[in-house]
Length: 563
Image 1 (tube, one colour):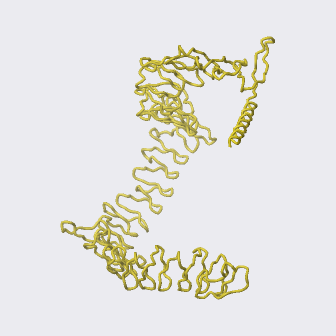
Image 2 (cartoon, helix red, strand yellow; image 1 turned 135 degrees about the horizontal axis):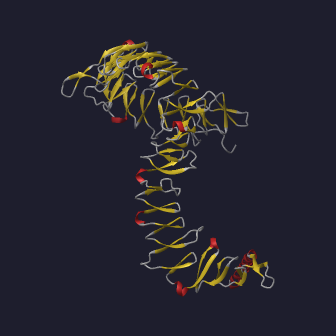
């Protein structure tokens, strides 16, 4: 046993040596060494297991020595007695004796002391040179030191800081919304999100990523213009001429698709042409077609080529009519008229409705089919009769002449007959034919006959009797006790569990272990469909020409497995 242990120990040692040797071979690297004699840089191969390259010099590896810096710029140091502080991105480093670094930490290449009274911290960043900052009066934002009068109210916005009391950073992209408090700040973004600027949504609007003031500016197809010197023509900002600086101007798109600014007091744009106002048309002018009209005399809108007043007229299919709405191509006044099936009808109701082509009072009347009915009178909680305001129609909807209204809070409609709810709660009232019953007390059978719920909520209909649906199943109009399974089915007059039996021609046949998916009926017998075919009531083993009558047999009665 001792010899075997020694042999295993020796084998393990050999294996360890092999692994260690492989690891060292994989550690072969190159160091760009400065040749002090020639002044040139030479690539020197070295074994990383026994040497390390630091600052273009090869040193013998020691478990306590490491490189402070990297292969290009660095010096070795002992991590037992020294501390290396570096900033790799800038190839900067510094070495401190551990005696002087007790209770200190690195901030880039600087050494910082840890004490409770210190007001300075380190602002670290890979891209920016780490630096100290006063955390009471300054903020470190993405590696940048930013001044803050009081850090209790200061936050970072990208690389800079801001006072949350008087500024905000709603776009989170480094742009501070100066003078915009957070509660009123929003981000104005272009559709592609490339331009994003903060704005005060109470006093400014947003135009394609740029905020603007509506009082003095405008947005023209994603560009901000100045109202006093520019005009938006289509999708282009056009400068006002010096003659129009103080005038009320508009833009006219000419037939050649160019745009021109004009003084609305002296000119008018008609049909793609700019014309001088006609003599006598000194007020507001409208152009319908290629003709100018005085708004005060002819109207303030065009219906085709004809002016009309939108205050008392409406344009329907290119023609102006008195009224405010259109009905079948003609105008009407919605204040005393309705547009019904065949045209305009008059009414004097507060809440009118149409019943085909007749108006009716929708508060006190109901339209059923094509007839207007007075709403039924119902008795309220005080015993006073009042007109129902909650009605529906009841009857044969294929024959509109049978429809009448009913109050759906106190009545219901059963097979086209209005029935009073009486003392039956509305949430348990159910129709059974033309009669109404309490669903908690009765069950409706065949849609027109009710039975008492003698088994409570488990009561079910079975022929002329009631059965307990929990313990029985109805087969051929007779209640039969369940087998105990939850998926019982009827097979003729009997109940079967489909997980145990299969029904063949109304006769239960045992599955005898054959899965329900594979079992099939063959006449009134049962066979395993995975192993056998059924033809004319006979079972054939798959691949065999001999058939056997399976009448009255269960699923595995034939063809024993040893045949």
